[in-house]
Length: 287
Image 1 (tube, rainbow, N blue to C red):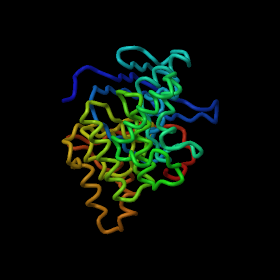
Image 2 (image 1 turned 90 degrees about the vertical axis):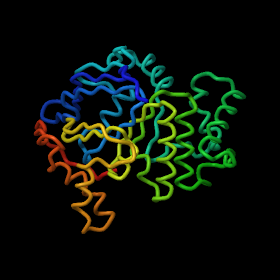
Image 3 (image 1 turned 135 degrees about the vertical axis):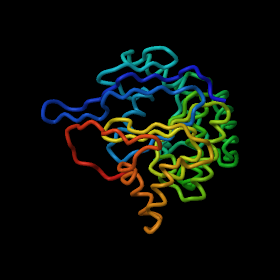
Image 4 (image 1 turned 180 degrees about the vertical axis):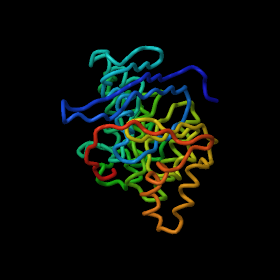
């Protein structure tokens, strides 16, 4: 059951890059409260501010303006050393590109966060072995990353994210490089992690993955324009309508265009608010 006590509180946070005419507003006065134990899916087109928001929540970046409270402590302006310690002890990261070190075994990769924490080698290797067993990779401990499949690599990355016992898991497109079968395995693992009481924040372009979340946030042009609680196991009506409207296209094109279509669709109870304008920049390809 989700606790009512706020774990994360973002108050009018903005993030600006560059200076003068080269200024880009990545986030514009975003306010957001996240409770302990929520599973939140964050959607939106490329350049909407999803990753910037996750980097700030994950203490990988600082807001230009605004406040960020983690467990009621304002962490927006703390020093780098304290920031790194809070990140290490509270947050686990799962990336689309896995980010495993190629010359270390899977066991050594998973144990690495504990090495940074100063845990003795025997204890950290045992903890890493237990984490790998939890994700079904006990028999791959001494393999190199190059010897694993994409799905196995992502499971190893999940084990690495869990080995420190974090309360928050940030997953940025965790199934982006996986086939459908491996993606399902990874999402079931994230679901199990959530059921254990962890808070999961997942960035995704794939609307079908929102069925694992209990809250959907949609971003556009650096602002949150849609935020709705939803039942786990169901795709929200607004997202489902977007998928159904694209059934005539092939599956790959459908997934690529759902975010664009959602921009034009109103929420379930009211019209979608207009996003604040910001200085334009060239959009890169989607991750």
